[in-house]
Amino acid sequence: MPSLLRFRALAFAGVGLTILSSLAAFSGCASARRSDTKAAAPRTSAPRKPNVVFVLVDDLGYGQLGAYGQKLIATPHLDRMAAEGLKFSDFYAGSAVCAPSRAVLMTGRHTGHVSVRGNAHREIQQLKPSEPTVAEVMKSAGYDTALVGKWGLGEAGSGATPNDRGFDFFYGYLNQVHAHNYYPEFLWRNGAQEKLRNEVEPAKNAYGDFRGGYATKKVDWTHELFMNEAERWIRAHKEGPFFLYLSLTVPHGNNEARDDLGDGQEVPDYGPYADQPWPNPQKGHAASITRLDEDMGKLLALLAALKIDDDTLVIFTSDNGPHNEGGFDPSVFTPAGPLRGMKRDLYEGGVRAPTLAWWPGHIAPGRISRHVAYLGDVMATLAELAGAPTPPATDSLSFLPELLGRAQKATPHLYFEFYEQGGKQAVRKGKWKAVRAGLGQGPIELYDLERDLGEAHDLAGEHPELVQEMAALMAEEHSPDPRWKVGGRPTPAPPPGHGVAPF
Image (cartoon, rainbow, N blue to C red; front, side):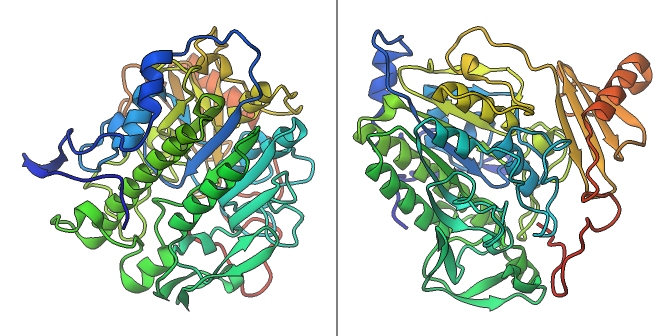
């Protein structure tokens, strides 16, 4: 596997392995010369509209980057990105699972309002025409727009594919179960299927034509295809302005390969972890994150080489908390860091995401932002950046002032709801976090995140007035949708041969 990274050593430290801090430099990335000399100095002339590269990865936990405390998995390029830019400590995904989180990103509407609120049937897992997308807003402001990677918000013929919803160019997966397979038989290029050289065995638990499965012949690894396609597209549109949504599937597991083969962490090789005394799924998981890190280094180096890094805002984040899928054991790497919970939880570990912003000459290096924001705020942020109005009926607050070191309006509160496991609700307001096991009913737990980041001490009994306030916010923010129900399949029911996939 080609690599910018050359690992020098792995050392035992106590009961675990620690990747030495001297493993790698930010190889080939010319951004260091820029942050040292230009450190967010304001420009004197009116700049052109900035490009945006928004990188959303799949199931990366809050504690899985070195910049957020990870010790066993090497991420020197992303750590350098954090050092040269802005690291958010309190940035949240849109939901605790994939589809609704991506819907929140695209529309700026939280899960009490957006049309896609869960990982469910394809008939309702698609955006409504009445919901403007970030891509449509950017396109209206004169941007070239592209999505490379995973969509998951509308099937072919639904009227809700990326090309239908504001993206000039699309290359990747439409369907989420199809996206489990890193070696599929085809990918979509705009409206047509493009054949790959892989051969796929349908999984024993395949979901109708969701095309779940795993490769028996592995040639084309989609993560590499996506990074190559992103590079080509950036080169072709370097004059800008452009908006690239790079929606990568690393480090999500292939659940169908896990079920049939016991290992769903699909990578070309285990890289620097090949000789570690870990089960193969652990090696594959670590290798996928380190490869992601290397490719982020290459991406930033490309922007510098094209001399458009000063004109390009890059945001990196995750769609939800870490998984325990694909045969991966989360206890080895503590992927949620100090947080409680993981994917499918509305505790912090399920929804708080590692998030970095990098824009040489505009974002001052080395900052840590404690501004509370979430994926839904990307809509207002990019609209302001592009000089376009934010669509009405959104739950979106621009954090562009925070990026630029200006006075930032505080977020009144964040709201989440979830339809699996009996339903859940959560509200973050200031330092307080309320979690309810049940949608519209059930007891409310209350946590002081300033003193109890791990949500270990329920203070509901000590603050009944706050509990009532949080309950009122939960009721206010939830807009009923008959298609989404707790305790059963959403309606309308799928046609024969379809089912609910365990993403």
